[in-house]
Image (cartoon, rainbow over all chains, first blue to last red; front, side, top):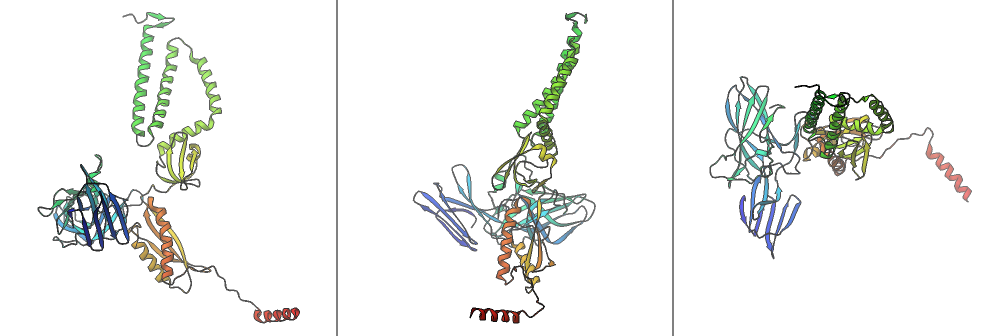
Length: 235
Length: 281
């Protein structure tokens, strides 16, 4: 389903009904899912639509650029160790149309449950999108319309054992890649003394030959916006 | 070089140099203070107010320097000071509230209990902060009314900023009938809050039977939401709770009271009805 699609286009999948067709000089866009209908008339000569996974932080509305993934089981990492784990993260599907010079996002939808949470204290803490994931030691199978795989390299820089129960990701740095079967994201988490973690993304796919997603947060990122996230309210 | 050469009146070359030095110092100090002030107020105050405040402070520094210069130039400033003092007193008395508002405005800028766009409650006036000016604070109430509150009042009153913290707790009291299953009602409400995308997973919602009231079993519902979203969620969830409870045969009762009569009411009614019937005949 992901990638460039020719117009006219009709998709019926996982409860999504998506139609893009020519009507005289214009393009008619219609999408139905879970009782929600979006209809648009596009005044464009484009004959391609792009569907790709985007940062899962636009639905139900843009409230926060942070995604908190809670681990189903606590991870305990030994001093000075570097380990790799895999987690699942939610996906939102972005529908774009290509103009002369830039893309325009037409629609964003998601098939997964939405929930928010607070990371930290009421005073000073931050609102995050909430997601709970199993911790995998190998790349798990996934429904790429619902979930992606996050490869998280954890590095314990301290000389103490550390427990990790969650990771917070900043949308302003997410580098999503996709192919016919998978959506992937790679990040690192460095643990420092005092239970502080620094989370950063890698701009590379897990599998070779994957396509890079057109991300929305990255596109609108201003120079000063940080892409790393410092987890100072606990791991 | 002879520094005692008289330039005019009793003013010597040295005096003139001193005057120039004081003026230069005043300008440098003024510029330094205003530059730092501009930086400090950069994101706190609108440019227009920032400019006015900086100008006033700069002017005060220059006027102070002039008062230092006058005796060096042989002008006795005492008369001027008395006149200025008197003028200041008159102006001060006449514009007591204006100066009060101005000072309060400066303190509001420093303390920053609210910023533009915040949702606040200033002594019963609830709405969005449109502007924090030097003299007054502008609030757009939820029904779209423009309210200007003098800063003196804002500064001395209680300000509730509804969105300063990331999250806010909302609370309902839901009364159900005594014959309804309160545990089931609690489960239904818990599930509704869990399913709602905007309510927070953590801090956890807290739902419990709070009181066995006169007409109902009262259930307290507490949950957290992102602060800016408090009103739409509060409005939406209460109605959804009511509807879902009713779909599950759990109802909010009307106020009711059981009344026990000491005498047999029925017989009296019968007697009275009999007598009224006979009268009518």
